[in-house]
Length: 335
Picture (cartoon, rainbow, N blue to C red):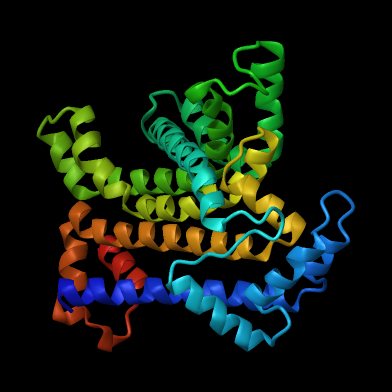
């Protein structure tokens, strides 16, 4: 398989994932009990005006069958029409546009925090001179995994907002306001990545070529930075791609705790109000982001380790042998 065929195949698989996610969520929402229009009519706080019922029924075809509604919805999706909110009547595209910037900044900040946490803990766990310090660093990922994100958020708010007063729990202070929610997200997702990173660095540090470099008198810092880190971080790269999905899912809780009006907060409101057009648009957005990042990650593997590129694109590892992409990567890294 050449590079062009590999990229085309991965793009096709990505489009299939998006289509399946949209289809699954659409029919799941259809079979759930409750009528979104009826819930808006009977809402005691913000009832839907009677004159708006007819146009909404005509636009969304709620009086038709599931298949017909699905075909119409997909046709509008391909034309770039995401529909209108059942709650306030605003364009779903405008709602996403208003919320996406908040979540993008939060997610990127959380990814940066995660990278710092993972590298610091993993390097300490493998290369710290003190045995007790290494043991403490190896125990931290378990603590991260066992602590709920909402609890971390409340603790950070209690300490840094209410007791120390370093940040405001209500006022928007620009980039400073992203520190606590980003730290909450990064702690929640860094546990598994840190464990894999520790194992990868530990194995790479005991490879024969590392012993040869040490015997030649190459400084330890140079060995770690130029040889052990690139070889030991390959499995971690895959987890970082999967982390994007966890960050978007965790944003629902974190943005609610810290009163951030991003995609997570918009999703929470849409689910609460049965605002199906907004829910479907969020599914398409998150699925697209997830598959694009995974596609970029797969294309980065040959850059980090040329052995993977030669294995993926050589004839001896062609698909006819039945090896999946992930199994081929693992087989090459294990050699």
